[in-house]
Amino acid sequence: MSQSTVRAIVTDIEGTTTDINFVHNVLFPYAYTKLPDFLRENAEAPTVAEQINAVRDAMQDADATLEAVIAKLLHWIDTDQKVTPLKALQGMVWADGYQRGDFTGHLYADVAPALRQWQAEGKALYVYSSGSVQAQKLLFGYSDEGDLTPLFSGYFDTHIGHKREAAAYQRIVEALDLPAESVLFLSDVVEELDAAQQAGMQTLQLVREGTQAGTRHPCVTRFDEIHL
Image (tube, rainbow, N blue to C red):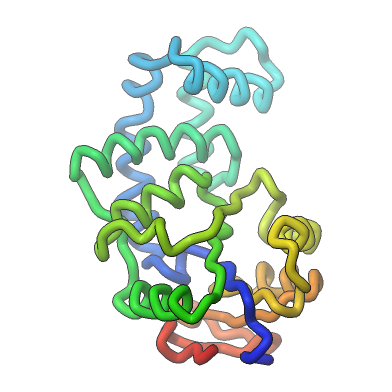
């Protein structure tokens, strides 16, 4: 890694800043349990209705009942589908949970100090996750370490493209208006790092517990092993 040239850092969340178990054992079950009643109670709200219609579009059934939409959403959760309207609706349910204090956003202990240090050094910080931008802001806004959202300059989700496609990272580079080689992408997933590398970014793999180290990218086990 050409450390002196890093001007912006884009980080994944799940398996990188946050234990994958928090997402799968806390967030997903919470949304699974709360989503049906949330939709029944809020189906007429414009932001919710928009996402319900987006689910109907994905089902290719404009007349699908609300219960059919709910069944489809639960199926998507069961099968871990990265579907944009599901992510948006999950974000709305999680917002409720965070605000009620039902949980806080998990961060590995090494993450917040490194983010604060990098931002203090003038590095621009961004998030790119398959979870919606809203869900990203909630996790960092209601994190174990308090509200970290002031540290970030921006957020990207699947609206910009899928995380294993180089075109998504090219769009991120264009949005940042920086040379690709001055942007560092952090992830635990080799295929995502491959795509970022194809777009010209620098890459680092986070090898957390349960992650398999690859051979194509430099590896670290903690954020405090990254020296910029």
